[in-house]
Length: 125
Image 1: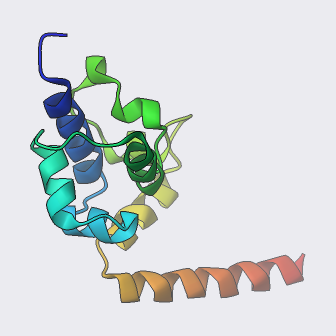
Image 2 (image 1 turned 90 degrees about the vertical axis):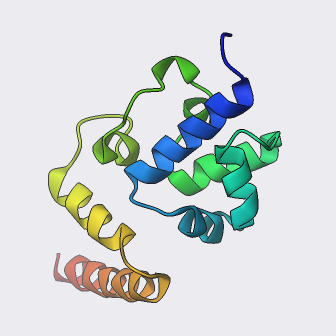
Image 3 (image 1 turned 90 degrees about the horizontal axis):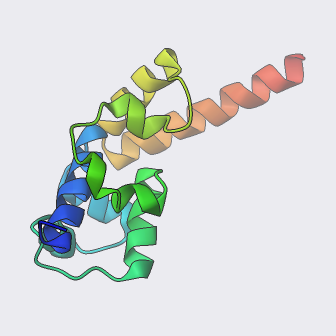
C-alpha cells in the first residue's frame, strides 16, 4: 500500500459523507461519535476501531468494506451512496438529497409524514 491507510480511510469516509451532503457535525450526530473524532478520522490522525468503522458504515448506509475499499478512492455520486446495489430510483434520490439537507427536527417531521402517508395508502389497498 503506497499511502497511509489511516489517511486513505479518512479520505474514503469524507467522500461518502460529502456525497450525502452531510457536514462532519451531521455525521457525528447521526453516528453518536464526537465531531472532533470524526474530523480526526478524516484527517488520518485517528486509528479508528472496527466497531466505529461499522457504526460509521451503518450511519452512511454502506457496507463497512466500502469504507475500506481504497482502490476506488475516486469521487462518488450521491446515487452510488444511496443505492449501492442497483440502479438508482431517481425520485427517491431527489427526496433523500432534500431530506439530507434538512435539520434533524425537519427530518423527523418528514419521517412522520411519510409514516402517515404509508399507513393511509396501505389501508386503501
